[in-house]
Every structure is written in C-alpha cells, then in structure tokens.
Image (cartoon, rainbow over all chains, first blue to last red; front, side):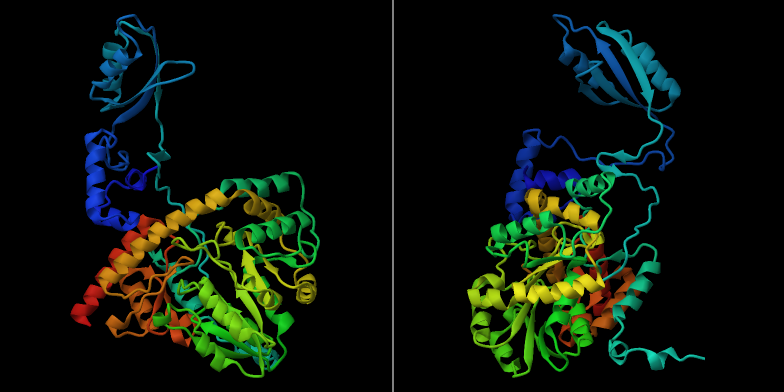
Length: 158
Length: 394
C-alpha cells in the first residue's frame, strides 16, 4: 500500500512537510500524489474520530440489518444509494450472510431513530425486514481505541 | 547491630548506581509524561509468537529445558545466523540460549576475564558492559567514539588502546545509544588490527535486524575465519521481535569458549524460560515479514525525529541502526543531566542524558524513537518549545 495512504489512514492531519519527511518524498511529490488521490476519489474525505458521548451528545447510534428483494429495476445498488442519501445514515454496506444491507444510523434521539425506521426505511418497496441494534458502548472506532483509563504498566529501564 | 555496609562486596559497592534510576522514578510519577527514555519497542510481540508461547503453556510444557536451551530453538538460531549473516554455529556445541542478551553479556565477560585484564569498550555505549566487566575484576579501557567518525570505533584509537593486558574488545554495533553501524570496510580494519593478538571480541549484535538504508548488518564474526575464532556473538529477541518482557536471548561462539560460558549459565540460571523458548522458535522461523514491517515503521520514525531535531537546532548524527537518536545539545550550553532534568520538569518529556552511557556521552542526549508517530510528534513539539524558551530566557 502507498505509504501516504497508510499514514493518512492513521492520522489525516499530517502536514505536507511531515508526510514528506516520513515518506522520504519531496513536498511537491507528496502534494501531487494527494491531489491525485483526492481527484480520483481514492481519498474520500478527512474527518475527526469523535467520542460523542464524552462530548455530551445524546445521540443514539444503531446498526440496522436490512433484508431486501432486489427487483429488476431496483437492485442492491439502487436501494443502497437511496438509503445513503438520508443524512442520519452514516454508513451503508452490502453484506454477505444472513441479511443484505447493513446501515449505520446516528440519530439525535430515540424518537428520531424510530421515525427513521418506521417512516423512511421500512416503507421502501424492496425492504423485506429490518432488525435494529443499538450501540450501547464503543470500545474502538475507526482503529482508535477509546481512552479507558488504562495505565501504561511498562517499567522504566535502560 | 550488623553493619551491612562493611560486609558488602567492595567491587559491587564501587559500581555507580544508575543515575537514570532516580530520573525515571521522577518520570514515572509525573502525570502526562511522554517517555522516550526506554530502549523498548512500543510494538506488542507479534501474535504468532505470542500464540506459540500460549500453546506451549496449554500443552503443559512447564518443565526445564536442557541447560543450553531447547535443541529445536538452537537449530533455528543456527539456521537464522547462517541465512541472515552467513555465520556457521553448531546448534549442539556453539549456541547457548540465555535470559536476554543481558545474561549473555554477563556470562561471556565472566568466562573470559581474569582480574587485572583490560577490557576495551567503545563509548558511549549500553550501561551494562562497564559494570559487568568491572564485577569480573577487569580494568575498563573506554574509547570515545566521535560524531565525525559516525560514532564508529576508530581503528587508530583501538590500536593505541591495546596493551599486553588487553583481553577483550566489547563491540556493540549497531550501537545503543548512538545508532552507529560499522560497514564491512570498517570491520576489516578492526579485524586487521586484532590479527595475531590474543584479544577476544564480544560482539553485541542485539540490534542487527534494525538497520536502515540498503546496507544490511554485517557481523564482525563473518569477516574472516580468524575473527570467527575470536568472537563471541551476543544476540536476542527483545529488540527485533519486540519481546523484551520474555527475557530471552542467546550467545554463539567457538566450542571451547562456549563450554565455559555454559558452565556459568548452568550454575547461575539453569535454563532460559521455557515458554519464551518455544515462542522464540517461531520468531526465528516465521517472522521475517513482521520484522520487516516493524523496521519500515522505525525507519519512518527515525526520519521524522532526525528531521525535527535538526530543525529545532539539536544537531543530530543520522543513525543507521537501532532505534535511538543521539543529538548534541551544545546549542543550549547545558550539561546533559541538566537538560534532561529541566526538560522533564518543564515539558514532561523523559529522555536520557548522554553521560549515562559513558563520560564521552556528555553534551548529548539519547532519544528512543520506538514510539508511535503521534507520541513522537507531541514530544518533538514539547522539545521545540523547551529549546525556544531557553533561547529566549536562558
């Protein structure tokens, strides 16, 4: 994998200078690669990983398993693309296994989530069934482990 | 009342207690302190190695192994040294598995040194050599390595240091704390000087896997048949395989020397931890890729730290091995101890004063970059602030 992508995947805030030092490429080379990644959609965006609960947010997070019947004119892609447009939907995946589509939803409160499932998702023509699972506690998010107050137990030695 | 002080060994009492101990005690008690002080990978031991340790426990392999170590492990070490460094050691007679490289250093010194023998040690270097040699009654002869030589052992300096009493040259490359490496041409010069003498070499190659750039590590034992005969090689698993806590290493050398080394190991230690030995088999056999990944990561961190330190004004020799940088703090006009103490106090970053590694380390500090880039980045920021404030306030 390209070193720049690996680094940005871990920390999107590296400056061009830092990326240049870390990879051994010139700043111009790094900038050119970044432009290319952004223009071709390899890099889709840059976002912070936030502990919303700690930030005082009352938002309700859930994942919803959806079974659908793909129709001739309305297959998995069409369904997924439609669902993706809802702002409360954070992620949408086509899955193998017992259900077809997994949707991650971040709603302001329980009511909003319930409305989303009842009014927006379930009535969609191809939806056979849904199963909503609430996220109760997060331990790791986008590769970042939540600060759980673990103390470093390493000894100081030389 | 019994007075212990009068009863304790004079030579032990003469050893300097590590100044670093006190320093680390302070660091440990400081909330939010970033430690770049410890020479330890931040990586956890690769999973397949841990798994092998767990499996050995599950299978109830909780007994002693033979004194020199599991024969399976010695076979793997023998193969490893051959495929990596072209060294031939008999698994049956020329390899002893030890409790870390540290034990190997100790028993090698004890097997070779008679009281009054001179032991040449290039400095700055790992803190244990001097102490261990002194315990055997050696006269320690330090040779200061210099940044203009890339902190390599200068052959002329070696020549001058050799006397009729010289017994052992301790040869620690890739070097802790400087990150210096010795290339083939440099090793050949050292070999030439030693030819015809009765000087043995203890080559501590614990960092042999951690070299950067295209040139790989070359063992001094591989330079000639003569060097092979006069070298005891020290190595281990702590650094390259991130196995510090397993306490496992090894030593290889000519049969006649190893027989004596084994006696000390047998009486003092019995055998290295069995679980760690089973894990180490996998490390030797199946971990080239994982080690390469870690080396790539270290290489990146090394560039990052060297670049930052030079920018800050702490002039930094480019280390080609191990995971340390050894910048000069000349700019600040401070002594190493003072620099480190103030940095810890004001900015909560723990690094090690260069003089901990021998008098020639004064004017330098050791920074271990075996930490994540985000931690290094935070630490570099704090060091920069510290140095900038010194420039303004003195």
